[in-house]
Amino acid sequence: MSLKVLQKDVDDWIKNHGVRYFNELTNMAQLTEEVGEVARIIARRYGEQSEKESDKSKDLGEELADVIFVTLCLANQTGVDLETAFYKKLDEKTKRDHDRHQQNKKLK
Image (cartoon, rainbow, N blue to C red; front, side, top):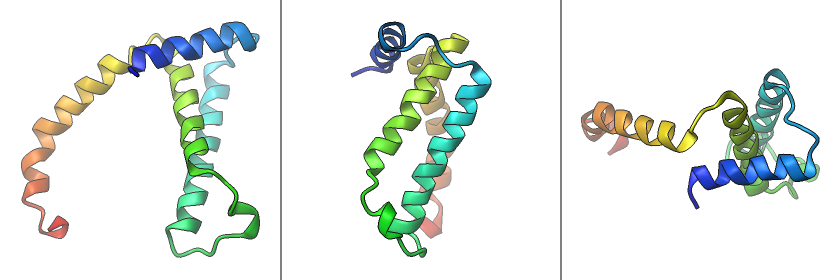
């Protein structure tokens, strides 16, 4: 499924199930909150912090999906074609980082 399709799916969902998009600042705050939830799971499940009993049932996939959903909302409301932006960024990173990462002894 392409990012264009996902952006349209989110827009359709907002139109059919929501009233409207939250404003950009509210969505930015929501994005920060969702990223924090992902960070909490990662830190406790894969990091050195112990996982609280109440966190053991949290689904990392669902939390990552929340991050994607809010990101798609922000892209839609600000007129960003996320698929085009993503592939442009991937091309830039490929050109910039290929040799750097290949030569990084820490990654060997």
